[in-house]
Every structure is written in C-alpha cells, then in structure tokens.
Length: 554
Image (cartoon, rainbow, N blue to C red; front, top):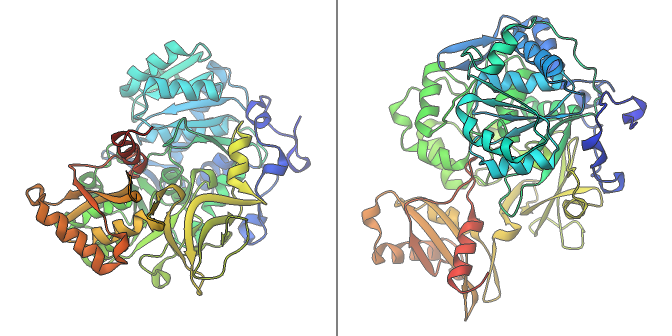
C-alpha cells in the first residue's frame, strides 16, 4: 500500500490515490518557507486539528457557527460531527478512503457533515447546491461514490441522481440545523457524542473538489489533509490576518474552495466564528453583517459592485476586512467600495487546483487594480510561451509554486497542461512590475485578437465600469470578416431607459479617452443581466459562444 513519507496510509480504499497523476507530473511542493508548514506531523487529520484540538485548547464554549438566529459552539459542532461520523461508520459501513458526496446550501449541518467525513477517514466531495441530477450523476460516477448526505430541501434532484446511479448505496437527508426529524437527524440523535478519529496521514486525500466546469465537464482536483491546513496557515495568518474575535460572513458555497477556506478552514484555524447565509444575496449579506456584527466579508466583485449602492442603508460599522476572489477585482469596483465604506478590499487570486489564494496584498500594501504579491509560502512569476521568466513590464503566463498545487484525478493530459517544469500554470495572463506586484491582464481565453492587436477584455471592462451609467459589463471577442474579431461589450445599465444609440457612442468615446483607441468596443449590446456561475464568476464563454453562433461558427 502507498506510504506518504514512509508513513502508512490510513485509507483502505485507495481508489482516488490510484488515479492521481504519476509523481513526475506533480508540481513542486514547497513546505520550507514558513515555520507552520514545516511543523506538520506525518500523521495528521485536518478535522481533528481544526475542531477537536481547538475545542480542547479552550474554545469549546466559544461560538463557531451562526445561522438563522441560532449559534453553535465549537463543543456543539464537535458533538454533532462525532455523531454523524458514527452514522457513516456504523450504519453506512464507510471504509477509510471512500468518498462521501455532500449536497447542501451553506448550513451548520453541512459543516458538521464535512468534519464528520474527515474524522471517519473518508474523502469529502462537496457539490454546489444548484447542480442538477445529470451533473450530480457525473460526479457520483466519476468519483465512484457509495455514500451521500443531502439537505432535505434539495432532495428532488438527489433522488433523480440516485435513480440513475446504481453505485450510490447509502443516502440520508438532514435538516439545516440537524434537529428537524430527517433521516440523518434521527440516526445521529441515537449515537454517542464521542468518536475514535481515524489517524490519517498528512498526505492522505481529504477532498475531491470539482471545478466549475465552464468548458465541458468539471475537472476533479485532489487535496490532502496537509493542504487544508497549509491554505489556512498562509493567507489568513499573514495577509488577511485573522483574530479569535472575528466573525466571518460570505457568499461563496462551501463546495467552492474559496468558500470552504473563508467560511470554515480560516476562521476555525484561529478560533473565530462564521455567519452562514443560506441565500447570500447582497441584501442578505448586508443584513447579516448588521445583525451579527460581522468583521470579515468574503464575496466576489459582482456583489461588491451591487452592495456599494446599498451599503448606506445598513450599519456595517463592525466590518474591518473585506476579501474578494473568484474573478479579477477591477479598480473602479475597489475604489467605489472604498469611497462608500472606508475599507479597501483585499483582492486575491486563487484556484480550485491550488486550494486557495496565493497572490494578494492587504492594508497599506494594497495597490488598487493590482492583485498584489505572492503571499508568504508561495512564489510566483510570469513566463513566456517557452517557460522562460519574463522581465518586469512583460505580459505572460502566471506560474506559481507553494505548499499546495494541482493534482487532477485521472486526467494526465490536463495535468501536463497545468503543471510544467514543476510550476502551476493557472491559465491567467499577468504582468509583474518592478516592485513585485502582479497586474491582471486576462484569462488566457479572454484575450481578443482584433486586426492584429492583442486586447484584454477585462481591461476594457474595467474602463467601462468606471462610467457612471454602467452597473455591470462583459467584454468578449465577436467574429468579424474584416478584423477577424471585434471587441464587443455587453452592458447592464443602472437605468434601462438609457439604452440608446447616444449611450453607445458615449461609452465608446469614454473608452477611447481612457485607453488606446483600438481597444474600444466596436459593438455594444445592452442586456438585463449577464451569465454567471453560482459563485458569481462571469461566464464570458457563454457570450463568446453566442457570438460565434450568430456568425455561423461552432
């Protein structure tokens, strides 16, 4: 059986391990740069460190989760997680190393289930709550899942997925707070509140995180117990510095590693608490900040733009730190939030493949419009197409090395694309300045080639967002027989009545005055909304495909 660093794996089921890429395709993993990273023992269970150990260290009676007027302490979360772990082992027959699918909105029971799976030696496969039966079935089959726990209100698609997936043998439903009489609620109520945790190896698999799947089926990325702690010992320890009295709140689902970090791993690593918002609309987030006196907000740029116009109606004086990820934070969005609140947003770039944020800056180190510098624990550079480092001021491919990295499950072709010469290549085009700050240019597929010019769609978006009439926008390539492609902007206005030919010219002239004239949008289409993922990312590929189809392409 595979042994990490000479320590035997605790996983009897080695299915996921057997589908990892060969070692020569792994990124270089660097644990040497920080004392916390060097201190991990070879045998490590992330759930035990974040929950059992924190309770034993004096946090047992401190709050950990707030939801719909109810607060759980670390001790109460521990008891529930232990009971669920007993259900998994004693009723389901969970074998260490087996995968458990979790399906829920952001609720306390989802967090309890997440910890229970790890405590029992299982592997978490958390799924976005809006996924349909076909998408769930893909994940069930891809990860060969026998066990699933699902929030009761999401049963319809789960039942359809189960009917189509013979391999799913055990399925229990739970209520949002674990006391509503659902199957798992009843099963856990009859179990003792203690549990013998499985002594996993630090490099045993903890979770399989599926990417958002914006092109084709989602990719399965694999993270170890060590990775869960490493992500919590870099960004929130050295950049978004977290305190035990912090109260986190945010919009990303816990199935998204941005959400998992900002609303579970990071606060619990430091004894803090989290407000879980079931339907995190901008209004609901502002209400939660006001009600629970939240101090840390994590959401996407789209939400910050919307909340900027609403924030005056709420008491958010408790808020001390705001974090943005999921997509590039444009300078106008950053400046607008700062003007409205006095708080500078901490921008960050992360990736499901990398677990969490690896470039960022906070406090006086923030340069609005820049993502920041490689955070402690990570290195980053800009490379040319041949893999050579580029000098400051050059645009190229972003490459990263640190204590986390990309390991695709059963996908060596994609692995070779993402990891080259030990570096993780994120698919982003960046420029690094002489001071070491990284400036976002575009996703690799967001570059528009028009009449021989390379034009960054997000750069044009950033300019348009600075215009007072524009609420949101997306800029993509639209096929054109004369220029190959033209720059086309899809614009959501604050006032739909302003959608006139005069506004089109006004926006075009505005862009020409701010950046090189060849970058201006030759076509502008006013829309009521833009396609987005559940995590708030713009789905520019939908608009690009729409434009190709209009032009008669594929």
